[in-house]
Image (cartoon, rainbow, N blue to C red; front, side, top):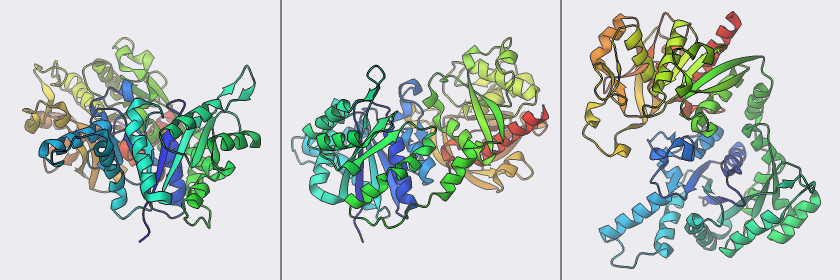
Length: 537
């Protein structure tokens, strides 16, 4: 069997150039040629995972099928490839050092002095090769977080150097840099790229391909200059110009022959063009909508667009299927009160109350849900959004004064949302959540059944509080339907209001499963409901 090929993607000059999008785009092109591909992210921070990081610090925390809390770039990988990722696809410095220290405590090193080289780098290489050792991937693309020259990234770059030495042409390095445009001079400047490659060379790694992020096209002379100063072929200087949408990037990289360059350098066949017909159909629908809806996203991290990355992308996928442009209007839940809610939510065709943790902005979310319920505006509540819908219904329909979640008010008289009994004695917050894919049984004749079209589903979770079944009969008698149940643990997964045109709350995170090839049906139906509401007005 041919050996797995390893492609490393590093970044220079500045962060946020789009290593994740370039990695995912290359993976898409290789997949469209018939190769099996997976992508992993090496993150230089010392946290074990992003699960306890503030979204303002690191954006969204993405959750995999097997319950790993990972970097948001894994969301890009899944959305492009339509293949689930796992714990092995995201590695942090914290996890690397934790593993090495545990081995040292266990006596695995037989009294050796434990050092960055070889012990830390060996552990990094072991993690990189885990996916390749499964025997099901032709390519493992590894994105290295941070920027070349960062002290945190040094062990990762050293590991790349060692792997290049060990496996030769089965290993390739792509370096993503910035070619800035100086308006005063009226020209692009290659010097930052030269310095970035020099920094990489100082660490013993020569890039094979250089991808240049730029807002203006590179001319042939500029490509030749970069090639000369950075020791690469002119064909290996790839332009990555600013795009209208991240979903344009695979086509731009195809036009730049990034995949051809990779295959030729790794001595792999590149005899036919990648089949991107379905991707092009998606892009056509995305860019030629027949209608438009405005959906309010009510959350408490709205200042940072990456905090709700998967939700925003799920709306892109669902909008394209509905041939409808979805304008997402982010509204800070702290700004919403009983007095301001009507003005804040005026003109919306749908309301989504976002997931989150903690008390801040909770009352604004509850007011938004009341407004959606009373005014028959399509509503989708995700995780905490569903829990807020339960609280709102308890207070304003059932008359349970002060109803709340024990997360927000441990002494509430009516804990309609409460922590799972099995979790009450666990103090380590990283270990108290229901994480990853869990089953759900859907009732016949419900909106949930109309959405999914089947009675047994699985969805990904990230939460520690649940619907309190003590109040279940009261809610059902007052008209709230529990249309999705986890039978094993008797947990409410989906609620809906049959008397409302479209009012659904879900305990899980459907946005994590939405991809270009398979838009999530909940978002597809929610956007369709918003469109119907818009056309009725």
